[in-house]
Structure formats: C-alpha cells, structure tokens
Image 1 (cartoon, helix red, strand yellow):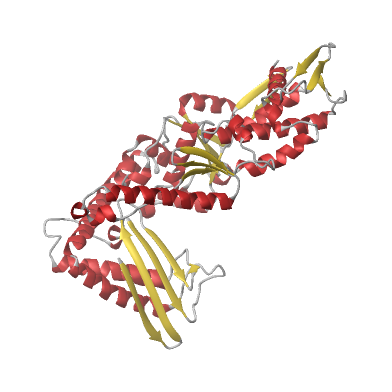
Image 2 (cartoon, rainbow, N blue to C red; image 1 turned 90 degrees about the horizontal axis):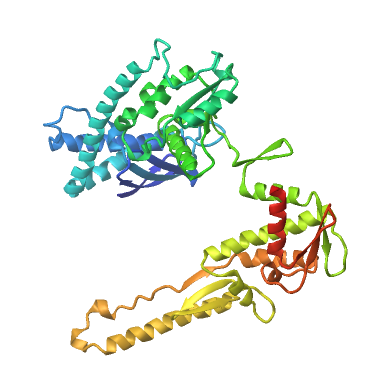
Length: 504
C-alpha cells in the first residue's frame, strides 16, 4: 500500500510518502526518515501515522460490525503486528530531539500525516474489501493471541518466584547479590553445565544449562514462546520478566549474560536462536550491553606437559607448524643455504594461504591443476570460468567476458529463431515469439589477485605455485637434530611433514 501527500505549512511545504505491507511474521518494523535522515526513535511523523492507521481500521471494523462474534479488544499494537512500513517526510525546518537527530519533534507534522494517511487509508479499505478483511482478521487473531499470551505470561510469572526468590532447579546460582557484579553463563546441555560449574568462581558466576535448541521465536507468537520450558527457565533465572508490559530492567539479577555454546554448527545455531529471543522479547538487555558471547576454544594442545587452547583452524595450523620447525632446519636445494626460523615461518604462512585459495577454487568445481594450466601467454591467472554452449572456458579479462555474454545471447537468439521457424505461423503464440535469453553460466575467480601476490612471495625462495603439488626436482632438505635428512619435492609435502612433526 503506497500513500503520498503534501501540505503547505507556515515555514514551507511538507511532503511525505509511506509504503506499507503486512506479512506473515509477528513483529512490527517501521523505518522512518526525515530529509533522508533515519529517525531510529521515530517522532511526531511516526506517531501521526500510527494514530491514523489505528483510527482508520477501528472505524472500518465498527462500520462493518466485524467484532460482533468476538469478545476481544483490538488495539493499535494488534493492527501493526506483521506490518513493515517505510515512512519518509521532507520538511523545511525539522526539529530533532537530542544531538543524534533520531527523533522528530515538530508538533504540526503529526496532525498533517494523521489527516492525510487517515483519509487515503480509509478510502483504500473501502475500495478493497477483501484485503481490508484480511488485515482485520489478522489484527483480531493478534488480539486473541495477545490475550492468551497475557494469561500465559501471568501463569509463567506465578511459576517463577519473582516474589519469593525461588529459582530453577538447574540453575547454579552465585553468592553475590549485587547484579552489577554478577554474571550468568548460558551453556549447552547438562554435561557442559557440569564442566562450567567446576571451572566457575561461585562468588559471582552463575551457570544455567539449557537442553538443545530453544524455540525459534521469530516464527512464534509470545503465547507459544512462554510455553517453552527453556525460555521459562531463563525468564525465571533473570528475574526481570518479559514483553513490553511486564519487563523491568531494575529486577535483572545479572548484568552480564554470557552465551557459551560449542564451537560447531549446532552451537552457532543455538547462539543465534538465543540472540533472536533477546532481540525480540528482551531488547533492553542488548541496548544496555548486558549480552556477551563467549568464544570457547576448538582444541587443547598439550606438549611436554604444557597445554595451550586453540580457537581456530588457522591458529591450529600455525601452532603445529611452529612446533614442527622448532627442532629441524630447512636447507634449500638450489644453493645449499639454510633458512632462518623467521624465513621459514614466512614461507609456511604463504603456503597456508595458497592452501586456503586452492580450497576456495576447488569448492567452485575447478581442479587446481586445471586452474594453473589455464594461465595465458603472459602468465596471468583466469578471472572467470564460463560455460558457453556446453563448452568450459577460462576468461582472463573483463572485455573477453562481456564478449562471451554477447555470444551467449546471440546463440540463444539463433536457436529461438530456428525453433520458431519450424512451427507453422498460425500455431505461434505471443508467448512462443517472446525471446527470454538465459544468463551466461559463470563463476568469478576472485582468488587470482591473491595468487598473483603469493606467486611473487614464493619466487623469493626460488619456488613456484606449480611446485605446490607437482615435483620438479628436489626443493630442499629437512635436517633433524639426530643428523637425519629428509628430501622434500613439493610444497605440499613440506607443510604436511612439518604438521606431522609438530604433532609428535
């Protein structure tokens, strides 16, 4: 639904436009702007729009007696459930509240927006009764759900002991009572909860284990959210209530709520679900910086009774390689010189980057050997991989790519014309005659730029990218402390040897 309007004010014209659409979600999203400046906290233009929307729908409901079989009061909040709005006004002298210019304060704007939107929206409802009924039915359903959620929330609050101090059985609370000094860790499962309890400082650290993945609140009404056991446990533990009507930040028992899930895909999903819950139903916790995310390690490496925690695959690789080169020396075959430890590290980090780029290229379905073999006469790597008329092609420049796009369209046009010519003219329809070319099938090879730089780095050691997996004579020898020598013929062989050495 799109509405636009304007009115002459004493200090200049006011122009506004609004686009709105209801969808299947349960949240209201209003994006408002004044002279192209985003007003995150709304203002008089938003309040005028909301008032017009509520008044128009209420009048339509009353005129058509749509609540005769329903014992529920439909409010503005219910009417805006699932509504997305973009509202923009242009005004000569905007008056913003505060220094951030995120809330409009011009009082005359509200009445202008309310009047014009009210008239236009009422006309739209009268002219589109089927759509109007759909909007009203959604609002009535939202009101019924709100009433049910209110009862469920009251029941949840009675179960939680906000008045008596009783807390969930699975919560391992801390001794400190000052919320500014307390923190609670939300952990994944009872086993993680047991480990966290052993490592916590019980004076100020509380542990709350949750079972599995909580409800996705983005796809559920508040009534269903409150029926979820894990959500109820968190509400009880935090002590501050839930929802706009019953949330009280002053009753929050912990000023640091730390999400600590496993460092895997499931852990990331649980973390996202928890953040969605806080964002939708306890946004004040995010606004006041009370939500934190712990970053647990992926690995623990123990060597010679010394343990170290590793947080990423790249860090693990670098650590293993640093251990792998600690008791060996690398001697270049080209001029029998040994590399310093810093030089070895620089070389290995370059090879690690090559490995990452190879993985990226091969994820696109292109073998690395084939990619290397596609260099042109100047030694440049391809920028695109294209499939044209069933033929796989490597393209080295934007001009070539544009030319192939033209060829793709011409080939399809020719095939379309030949097909059309084979059909009697009296049997041809307009749909048959219409030509809709399919886009050229391609992948862009962003890696070529980085590989160019790595090629230059490897050249400093007289190595090439071809030597990553293709033997072209001995590259170097690895000398161990016992006097042994291991010949190395490829860069891949080098890095795998040092990884293995780091593990032993």
